[in-house]
Length: 257
Ligand SMILES: C/C=C/C(=O)SCCNC(=O)CCNC(=O)[C@H](O)C(C)(C)COP(=O)(O)OP(=O)(O)OC[C@H]1O[C@@H](n2cnc3c(N)ncnc32)[C@H](O)[C@@H]1OP(=O)(O)O
Image 1 (cartoon, protein in one colour):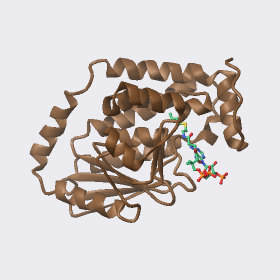
Image 2 (cartoon, helix red, strand yellow):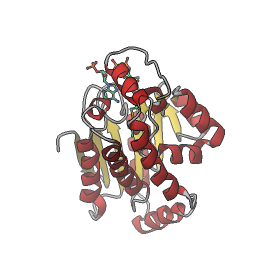
Image 3 (cartoon, helix red, strand yellow):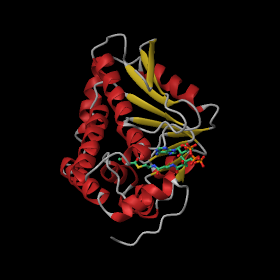
Image 4 (tube, protein in one colour):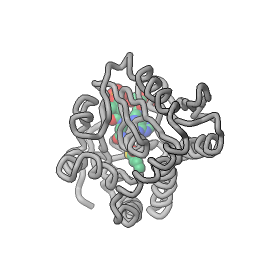
């Protein structure tokens, strides 16, 4: 594993994203998250999973620098589908997964966190889906998961302004379970994981399966549509401008083409 390490202790598997400076979700990192799930899925010594990030951020999203190496919209849609598959696997996993978020969970970083069952956040963390600022749309099913958590109006505001909200607001909005200080967030998340690992794994599996029924029946269609749009929007000049502007550290100028 290059970018994800994990250790199992007291029935909890704790994974740490280690991809400085921003823990950006490259294709390789997403693959490693999938490999983590495979490694612990049938391990009876693991009853609960916890993911967090090393350094300043949980994750600042998909790797914008990797985007410049992608040649066409079809490849971009495929990238979206691969991420969607792994995050869907997390959400429908038979063991609970907790995200411990500090610093920032933006774009794909928030989409990863929304694939988890529970989110503990630091009060000042920035949470958002800022893809429109890059001339893009979310690609890892964020456009479908966010409204389910915060409601349509708040999701629309977050998407259409690209403005992040704080960890404290995220709890008020229903996006996160608990906000604590940055120093405390990992320890509190771990304590929660240890507590949940005390429950019957059979009952936990059943409860998680039941929770899946609360999903909107149109979710898959929406996620498919999202991957399609992700590929199409990627080929626009505005997306090139948005990505270039990010790398050059300047404000993008979008022309609507
Ligand atoms: C399907 C999914 C799609 C997506 O997820 S699209 C991506 C969505 N995410 C974003 O748009 C967030 C972009 N990043 C930021 O807004 C900011 O960064 C932060 C708020 C996270 C941090 O800001 P600050 O504290 O001022 O640090 P800094 O100098 O901007 O970033 C530190 C280094 O991290 C790199 N970086 C940040 N985010 C990403 C990213 N998503 N992909 C690749 N690199 C990233 C920067 O470029 C820089 O690097 P260097 O020090 O070499 O200049």
